[in-house]
Length: 163
Image 1: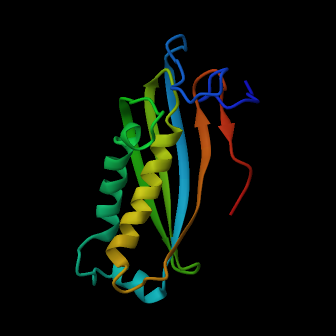
Image 2 (image 1 turned 120 degrees about the vertical axis):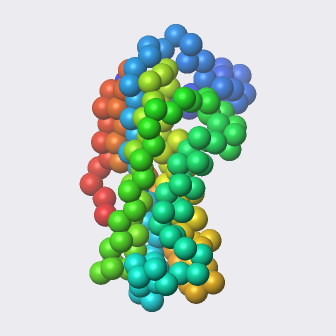
């Protein structure tokens, strides 16, 4: 199903929470990604345990998972979801001087988990920024996007090839 209108507005143009009460309960999965670009010396601190604040990537992973569970509190019209799984994979690419965050969020319900996965990715990357800003204020977070989603009446969707 492809929609040509914004679903969070009613016929009068007022913002509203979408009624998902008549949708089928299905397993829903969303996979997102994003990147943070850092100086090489910052990456070395992360990789060799030289960071004063501890395990930066481990803390970022936990922060992202915790944030995913708060999505409905952060995004006004999101439905609160009972997440069945949130996995965050942080991969260091020394050659490109960046860390890739890939998040997989799952639920069984009547609406998708794209927003939960996107929030998790953003907060994990922001946590890395926060923990490393004392040594590298020029970090850049970019490329936040949905890679794949499945479940529901719109079926399986994949992003076009990117980075």
